[in-house]
Image (cartoon, rainbow, N blue to C red; front, side, top):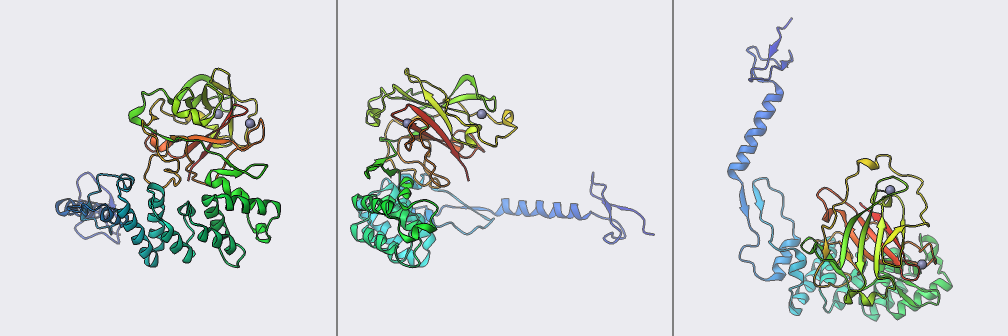
Length: 421
Ligand SMILES: [Zn+2]
Ligand SMILES: [Zn+2]
């Protein structure tokens, strides 16, 4: 029989198991582990160095190259991050620098296709340049992702994408998305041809070939024309413009959701009297998107506009099969925390939700986290126009997901969709 031996560390008192007990007692395994961890932390803190990979680098092409290389993790090294976002560096590039980044991406495609794709996505989205050689290189390597890098691709790449769809082993999803982003009159007429006579390979797709257009913000109208599902100009929604009144982001209304009984909100209220929005072609004095921040996560929530420009819960709403039973515990969305930036930005700035740009915006193209999900208007059955989105992450810490807002000009009906990873 072994005597009960107790850990000698002050305040511990853990019994030490007979097989690990030393004859004279001592610290228990837990205390030994804690001591080692504390020593390790002290060692790291005493010896850690800050390394600024950007020190002395002034060439933005070099800065972007460094930003795209993630340094190897070393607990003894703390890497100083660059004071600007990649977006801010991209938008300052001169035409020569844009060409230099492009050429670097083409070389990188040979050794690290994934990183090349990431940089190509940022370059073609944030800047304008001669991207023909880049399109050619990605097409040659059968690297069709991300498909939006093909925006503005030349006829030669477009025609080979169309021909390649009939070939044996091309990724048809990616090729159709690339064509949707090109979206020129030849693509429109090809999508029409496929709608009239579906190709053999269409059977293996989840949607009809012409429906891929929606991922790039347009669709074929019933008479075969290109119909835009977006409005311009596009304004980011940013905290330092929260006091502005052109676009009011999240307000409490005072009425409650008939499904979950939580207070309803106006996600967006966009003043159509502002001259910048005249090109949106809306007939209502305001585009107001009334929604439930809980229920819109489980199904489309519609709202009906009033003639004065406010909105109410729509008579067209259909309760989803499933709704959470803890809606009362959901946090409220901060009200009037964002407002429209003073300057507009290109409509496609946020097409990739993973890039480091503000996602919240009015106008422009949506940042779909999942597949595109434009709702059909319950009044006229046409595809609804995207009018804006609010990123939860940009409203509150530890929140996620994006609320997408839609509107039908003809019927004055608004809609909210929600996606998250
Ligand atoms: Zn609700
Ligand atoms: Zn409608």
